[in-house]
Image (tube, rainbow, N blue to C red; front, side, top):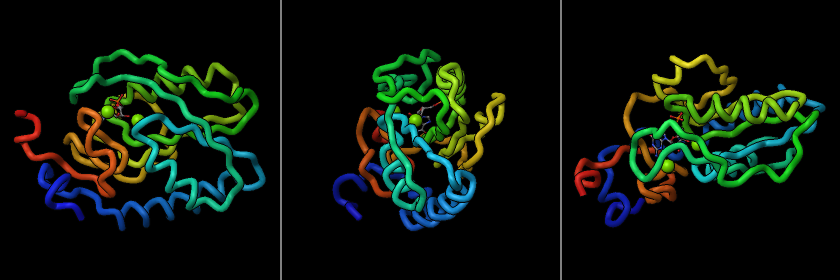
Amino acid sequence: MREKDLGADLESVLITKEEIDAKLAELAVKIDAEYAGKDLLLVGVLKGAVMVMADLARALSSRVTMDWMAVSSYGEGTQSSGVVRILKDLDADIKGRHVLIVEDIIDSGLTLSWLLSNLGSREPASLRVCTLLRKPDAAKVDIEVEWVGFDIPNEFVVGYGLDYAEKYRNLPFVGTLAPHVYSG
Ligand code: 5GP
Ligand code: MG
Ligand code: MG
């Protein structure tokens, strides 16, 4: 690990790289079974889902295709703005296709419920969700998430794709930041 640079800003490691790998392998078996004999399109939500997409896709044995969408719901801070904007739309037409949204984290569920209605209106054959992390508030909104890696406490986490002000995405694990990082 990189205790001297990135690691110096961390308070704790919540989920190790080994735990993430094991969980994605477990989810991949279920996803492979669910889509057996079907063409699956994985839709990754940039930028946070880059790591989970890369590792989940390689854990699958099915033939899949991948596409990306970039939306923005948070600014540079840790609070939801409540506004979702498309920064980059899908390249593919998803009409009639089996689509699996791959997410890093579901917190308020705002981003996801917006995505589900936006992509749902494009008439995919099926539309489901896999997320690495889910926070407690996600239970308050009425969205169905088929595959969840880890339910985590209501803390702001970074690493494995997740950022704070665009930093810490390259940590290979999920952790929490030390208070001095926020206080500047
Ligand atoms: P939601 O709309 O469900 O509240 O949040 C979705 C997005 O907010 C995630 O894709 C992620 O970009 C950001 N987010 C929510 N919780 C966290 C967190 O604990 N850490 C980080 N780094 N981003 C988060
Ligand atoms: Mg995300
Ligand atoms: Mg972010």
